Picture 1 (tube, helix red, strand yellow):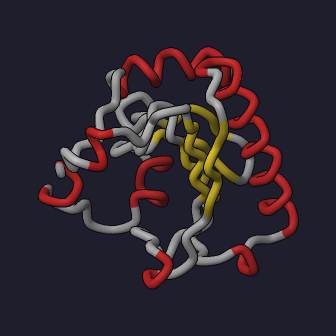
Picture 2 (cartoon, one colour):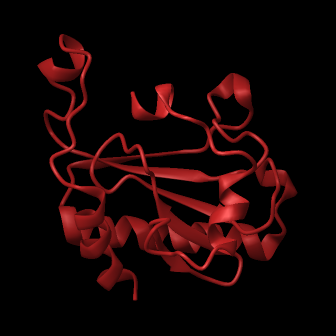
Length: 149
């Protein structure tokens, strides 16, 4: 609800956040040459990460080969780190291309990786229309940061 009802940031967050010198505040966990990893500020589950290229492009076809290859390598790194830290039962990995596909920032491609756990969709979400996250973002950030360094 904080995201839905709150003030939306102006501009492209995937361009602005890596340019700021505020990695902790922006929950940026890892930077490579062409892409970076940040936590979702409004996660579906603990450890919900996003991987984005630094370049402002809307789709996979707009990525150069080196960017695309690095995106895949960093996605694999995220899977390994999340497995090590949180031991999820599975993952959802996805890219929403275009507004019609649900992209909140359709003009800047990014990949979501969401750890999934047995029972993470329970009565709270179904009946109470409430999703609970059992850990503060700052705590999750500190747990993950050491694995990415």
